[in-house]
Amino acid sequence: MSNIVEFHKVSKRYDGGREALAEISFALGQGELAFLTGHSGAGKSTLLKLIALIERPTRGQIIVNGKNLATIRRGQIPKLRQGLGIIFQNYALLNDRSVFDNVAMPLIFRGLPLDTVGRRVRGALDIVGLLHKERAMPLTLSGGEQQRVGIARAVVSRPQLLLADEPTANLDPDLAVDIMRLFGRLNEVGVSVLVASHAFELISRMKRRIIHLEEGRVVSSTPAETQ
Amino acid sequence: MAGSQRTAERRTGRRTSPLRESIVGYAREHLRVLLFTLRRLVKNPGGSLLTAAAIGITLALPAGLHLVLQNVSLLSYSWESSVQASLFLRDTVSNAEGEALARELTRREGVANATYISREKALAEFRQLSGFGEALDVLQENPLPAVIVVRPHTDHGPQQIDQLVRELGDLPSVDQARLDTAWLERLYAILDIVQLAVQIIGGLLALAIIITVGNTIRLDIQSRREEIVVLKLIGATDAFIRRPFLYTGTCFGLLGGILAWLLVSLGLWTLSSPVEKLASLYQSNYQLSGFGFGPSLALLGGAMLLGWIGSWWTVARHLGEIEPR
Image (cartoon, rainbow over all chains, first blue to last red):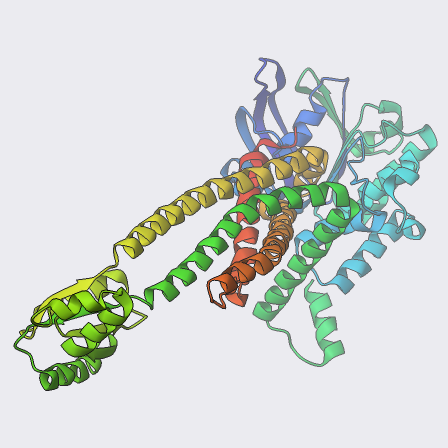
């Protein structure tokens, strides 16, 4: 199995002097679903930010989908992000636009014909079970529904890699399980998924690989079959 | 994507070229942004109108001054057409030679017409107009020379007229050539200064419009900071994010331009009646001239360009500062 993400001795030190990641090396295989866990400040979010080029590493090499991120210039970052699906803890929806418009946004960047946009947006909303809410405004939805809109937006452009940063942190336990199962279903159709979550009990039940971070270092990487 | 294109081709029964597809996509995207921008402006009519009003009033000043200058220039052309030169002929030139010279001058380039006034006719006119009839009877001989009155072409400027009169003054039959254009030259000099002042004021006010639009767009960018961060996170290019702001600035410019046009036209309409009344007192049918089609388009186009520059300048400065963290 080839890797979609590779970290080679990657370190990240923020301007304030705090070292968020220290010589991390790991790989995420194509079509793999893995969880990043660890306490707050362990470096989970920083790791995802490095993959999405929200931050640049201080040292080391990161390869995403065969591309060395160090060679990507500022103007090429949007292209890289268009190939990713990113899901945020706070949903990051545009509240003055409908559910449909939010989900359609990544397709509009690409200038796809409107009928294609409509078909794919409805397909994505169907996957997350929100087809009946396409005209609703985000603030009229529950937290779980808003997070599912965020997931629909992340998958609508059919990314090869899905990154989720604490996607269940603001949700009650039942909704959190639903969301994690949704990631499992997306993974079954071939999408690679990397989820950062501190909800260890919840992710243990998913029986997938868990990468445990502590103070910016990988302290364990438990294969899925041992769960 | 390729699959959906093939489906579309099967449905329409024709192949779509990649170039045509990208042009259609580009046009569709711009139409989408235009409609989005107009919706946003309509949603906030108060703020939009205030910005447009500020631009309109700022633009109306140089546009109005330009129009005033244009009207004064038109008026000066009509004064210029009344300019005439007097060629005083030598005493040795006979009436037949004088008349022949006048006919010859009429055919000369730059001369609209030339009229010969003989010494006898000049004396008769002087006797009639001056009221010195009896005093003139005392004189042994006619002191007045024969004159050719030359009216230059109206499309000749002051310098060309000067040159023409100098050339006519050098003719062998001409003793002296006189042209009183000093007052017209002074007027042109004043108009040149005023025109330069209008250009300087126009330039400064254009800068003010750029700053006004830029500031409005800067506030818009700040109020949409979170939206910009989200768009960048999900892969929007700077061009995509910039586009609605550029359209907003251009729309402000257009609205301001329309308002300026209306304000200046209203001012012109208000002044036209008193000006016509004043002109009639001088036996003139002079009328104020308004914006033609071309200048109107130039005003609107210029206003849109200033709006675009103001928004582009601001977006270029501030968009790079907003990055996901």
